[in-house]
Length: 132
Image: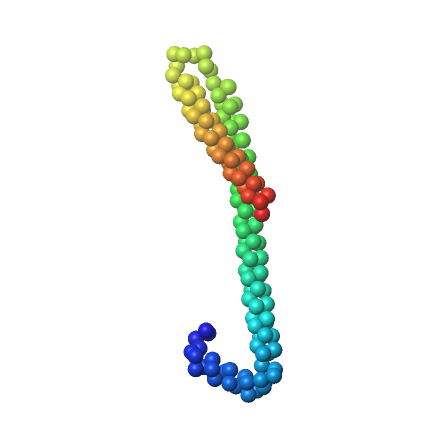
């Protein structure tokens, strides 16, 4: 205990008996034990409070990132839809618009998958926040 051996503890106990006397020693030991218990619980409470505060700020940062990514995906998806509708679909001889349509559709599908994943993460984040 605290790098002390049996002999050191025994020596401290003898000095305590001589200094306090046998009548006051038990109550002094109880008071010291209570002090250490309160000190330890205070340290544990401070640690848990600090951990909770750090976790909450980190969760808020993640939520802001998700919101920003969802808004980016929405703006990109609306631009891609405008590109798709502006292309000439009736011209089948020229393959360039068809390639552009395919590219735009693939982009839209990728953005939709990303938006769906972001929504799932946001829902999961909201559920975890409600639990806390």
